[in-house]
Length: 167
Image 1 (tube, rainbow, N blue to C red):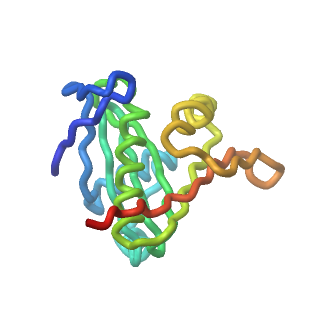
Image 2 (cartoon, rainbow, N blue to C red):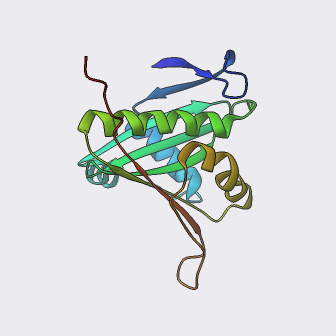
């Protein structure tokens, strides 16, 4: 596991108190997080192992936030956010999503191809965050509103590989 300092975008200075850790979650950690989110549903190792085939998974943590970042099929990102029992940290939601964006950008750069990220939520606080700080990070290209089939908001963006400077 490693911890990286996150740059404070307001002042341009590094704030050593603001950090996020990134690692690959164990099967047990993923089961615990998903179980919390799904009202105690028990996940078998077989179910998760089957779902993990061809999927890259990262866990980003800061304060009381845990963010699972999934990369499906080498081109589509999805995130699941959960709370753990740790003490809250200032701006923890923004910090974990900034780090997730770095992961997404690194993956897009390393593969040299455009990737899609979709954030889906029905949580009012998350909706407000996505419209403001989330838009500053991801620059949403499409927003879908709830409808009779899906009661959640969708925020979609493309992560394009950065152009590399030739020497």
